[in-house]
Structures are given as C-alpha cells and as structure tokens.
Image (cartoon, rainbow, N blue to C red; front, side, top):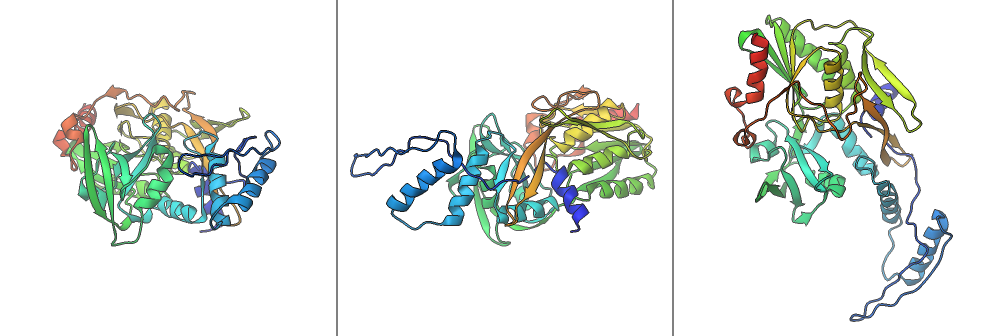
Length: 401
C-alpha cells in the first residue's frame, strides 16, 4: 500500500495512536496478601498527578513483592490500554501490533472470521451486532442485527471489551467459535465455523418500474469505485430512478462516503463540516459535477452509523434524496489512526462532524423524511422478501409517483 493510500485509510476511518505513556493516578497503594481473610495494607506515595513517579512506585513494589514472572511487554501494553481507557471515550482505544494488523485487514474487507459487524452499545455497555455480512457463516447460522454478544467461548464480554471480543471471535479458518447471544428475552447459543470473508461492498439490481437498487454493506476501501461501476451497469439497463440502501451499514472510511456524495451533489456544494478540539472548522465541498440526475430514495435505519450518516446528511441537506426508514444511530465523531514504530496504534477521536446545514449528528442521528418501521416479525428474518420489506416498498411507492 503506498503512502498516499495509507494516509487516506488511516485519516478517514475513525481511528489513531500517538503515545507510549501509561497511567494510574494514585497516591496510596494498597498491597494485599491473603491468608484466609487477612489483608495487609502497605502505604506508598508518589507525587500527586505525576504519572512517571506513581508508576515508578508501583514498579518498585512489584519488583520487591510480586510472586511470579513479569512480562514487560504485556505490562506496557495493558498500562497504555488503561491510560487511554481513562479518557472515557467509547471510540478511542489502544491497539497492539497484532490488533492493528487485524484492523487494517478488516478495513480492506478481507479477513478470516464469521462475518459480523459489531459495535458498542453505550447504554447497555454491551457488544451488539450491527449486521451479519450477507452469506457469511454468521448470516447462515442465524445471527441478526441488534443481537447482543454476551459470551465468546464461554467468556463474558462487555461493551468496553469490544475489541477483545472481536479478536476472540476471529481465528484460523476452519476452527469454530461458540457465541452466547441475547435476543430480547431469549438467550441463544451459536457454534459458528470461521471462514475467509471477502466483503462485497456494493450490490445492485433493477426493480420494477425501471427502479435501480444499490446496497452498501460498508464503506471500506474501494466502495466508491464499486458504486460508480454498479451505477453505470444499472444505467445501461435503462433505470429511471434509484434506491440507495445503507441500512445496517455501520460506516467505515469517511473519504469513501464523501466520494459517493460527490457523484450526486452539485459541484461546489457543502458535503461535510468538521470541528476539532480548538473549534477549528473545516468544510468539505463537492469537487466534481454529478453523474446522477434522477430521483433518489435513501434507506436508513437505527444501525446506519458514522460514514453512513455523513452520506445521508450530505444528500439530505442538499435536497438530493428522500430519506425513508428510521432515525440513524447517531455517531457524529471522526477518529484518526496513528501508529508507533513497534506497529501498535491508537484510535483517537479528533473531530465532531455536522451536516452541511450544521445539524448535529452525534448522539442525535438523522431523521428520515418518511418514517417507516419494519415489523418485529420482519426483523427476525434472515432473508427478507421484497414484498415483506415495508421500507423498501415505501421507497418504490415514492419513486413510482
């Protein structure tokens, strides 16, 4: 991957690493030894707020008292992880070299696992399924959007352990993983075989009344190019209108979503507004003349997040689509991904973004122009027939007029 391409992936995605510092702020250390119910308290001190001296105090006691072998690398990794976790931001996290390699592989849409997109439910502090990848092992096993992954191979995980749970689910091709899933009031168990997963970012077809249909599974590297190719294919079949489906799309690369909006919005129009911690504002504008000049309906739901919301906001505020479905997830912050010389990294929140009309997205979401909810029965089906998809049917109805 060349340097320019690497910067694009790392900047646009929601992710970043900068430091090799560690922490634990405390002036009193409780050392405990257990003999029955006996606990001995030993007091030590470090300069208040001085990370290095506090850690040095910890290390002296560990060297003197700890019974067992010390893994220096693991201690460093876990201390950095805890330091970053102290920011209390659900999207900022430290990643080891191995985790970074897996993450960048996922961004390219090419990995080994069971084929599910996961996120952290901040309300429930749970690992939740955004959606299974179509025709993946998870999809075939019956895992559904909004399922909560409570255990992986018998080990419980919370939302704060999203990265650990994701890495535990991945593994060698041909091996199996057991998931405990909470669905409503039910607790279900799935044994799923890991396979090589190649994500098809874009799928398309022609519906009745010459309506084109394009679905995005994610906004990974190359999906804007795939969208353009699929659009040309549908145009050759004489479509007169278009449905773009980003339901259950948890996002991906910001640049990919911007490029797709650029195909639709008039040149020079605002697409995205980002603001950093110093309140410095940056406005991204459409650079090209649009290649689509037909009525468009955009389908969204509560699992449309991040880059999906960037696309939805850009198209809605520029009056280029009618949005049908349910209010989106509400992730309106961008992360950058930085790397250290040892290959580890930090995914760090750097900007909040707003729609062209300066509407807030983070923890708010984007509301549809026409609100349509799927039935509870429809939500539990692995394969939803077109006639059962009330949101799709409303989009078709709108484009028929």
